[in-house]
Image 1 (cartoon, rainbow, N blue to C red):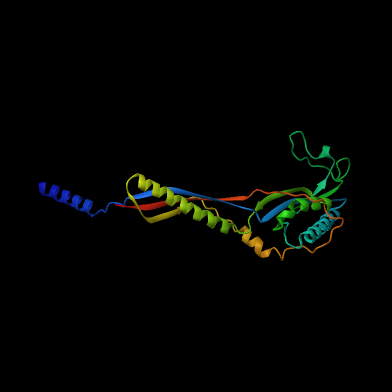
Image 2 (image 1 turned 60 degrees about the horizontal axis):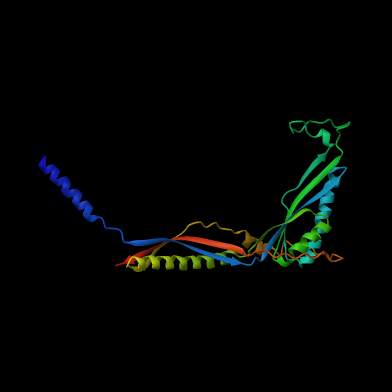
Length: 252
């Protein structure tokens, strides 16, 4: 029995001796922030057409979309991409016939006081362009041409990857400065870079696709007279931030 215990103890000692102690290291979180002036903008609006029949409502939306697209294309010199991926038509009845007290839609007869009075067609649209200095005036032009619920959705970057590269370089410098201060404060010497981990990257490929297809998606141009009301916007810079988890070795 004593021999068996001795062999177990020897095996445990050999196993412990085989383990290599981990190399001393410093782990820090580096942050890099870059501000870049935007070079693309998105403007959203809604086109609404009404008519006695669904065909009339649909035709109204079609004609308005053509006029708005041509007018905006002429103003921007064709530098835009037009997005319209939804279209709906609904019947219009007197308000008192559409919902009950619980806000539920009530079945209505095809004739009488709740008969269908007409149809409303709706098409949400968004326009993306690099002509950011014309965004405010474009809103006033779309309003003149018949668009509704017009708004400047967002300013952004055509190439967000370039801004991210700069922010990442700044984060690496920030991490190394922190690690050096920690090493000097502890009387050690900062060694080689061991590991870098991106803490919170979220990719965005939409801008690349927009840039590639923008010219081919432009509607035919039409000169609008008189000139639209000029409105100037001053967008804030786009902030790009990167956070890295970085490990450095400590040289003895």
